[in-house]
Length: 64
Image (cartoon, rainbow, N blue to C red; front, side, top):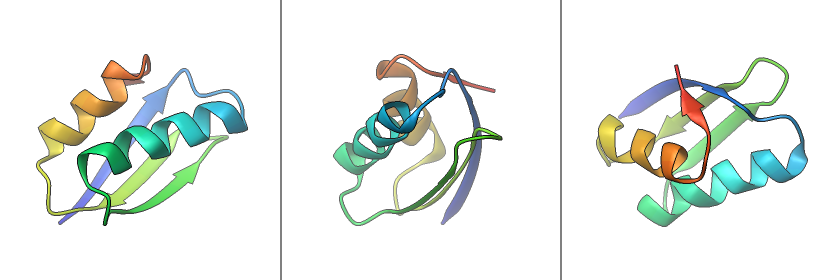
């Protein structure tokens, strides 16, 4: 499934890597595209939207 998130709090490449790693901890096979300036995160994953959003929030970012 394809999931789209708007993530607030990402300001640098470290933030981008942290979100990427958080999502991959839930689904190592996920295809992730992050647009840092807009905060848009597109994830192709078999996991639920809720599980992916929780991983982002647990990493310290907000999901709008």
